[in-house]
Length: 280
Ligand SMILES: C[S@@+](CC[C@H](N)C(=O)[O-])C[C@H]1O[C@@H](n2cnc3c(N)ncnc32)[C@H](O)[C@@H]1O
Image (cartoon, rainbow, N blue to C red; front, side, top):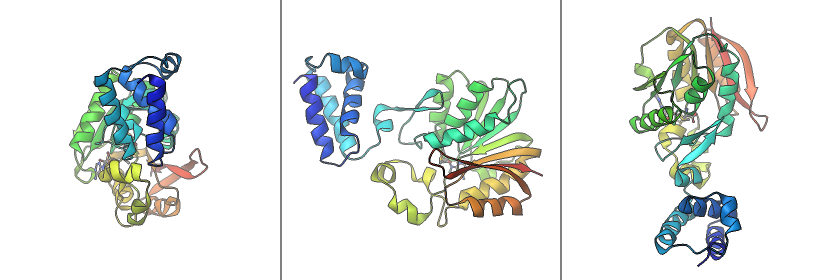
């Protein structure tokens, strides 16, 4: 079979499983197998695929048919300005989370060396992006998942910032080191009802520990706010991602814990997504 025939068959197969972009996904999978750019693949559409590659192609396609996200099949996802390795141990970096990076950079002057903590680092996408932009800063990245932390370490190495980030496998509840200028977090914040309504791509494949914020979705938001109060310096900043319906309750918890709200930022869809606050 040549590339053209394979692409047609692949697309039709993915359509049967209601995959949203069957054409693009099939092309990306074939590009990965033959290790060529998509454009080259289309320019050489009459080329034949080796039998071993055809087998590989079919097995990857079957994973997509079963709704496995492309970021896990391809093994990477672009975030901010870089490519991050991803596997099923980590949440796939989301474009909305780039808002944390954008907002945090406004509080990190380029010539200052600030001390940063990333709570629930996952793939390390936020902290690695920040340190790439602000090389004078030093960061600690913690995660309750050892496997996620390993992915974050690999990403830090990939982007040559491993010496500037300390990785610790710990629950935020047990973390005691203090004196941070800035704490960032994208905690799990999906409530148990919404968790069941997520697309199969997410629900069946992304780690539950990275998604579930408990019954009401606030379990980890609350933890991060309460613990950060002890870990931040006076006037230190807490920058946290929230679900788009969680603004009021999050602001209430922040106020109750003595934070001043600086700003609430909206995501690309115009929904409340990120709160910037100061420990008073
Ligand atoms: C929503 S994901 C965010 C991952 C990454 N920061 C991002 O924005 O793509 C939340 C992360 O928090 C971690 N986590 C969950 N509960 C935690 C806890 N109690 N202490 C530390 N990390 C936790 C999960 O393992 C997961 O990696």
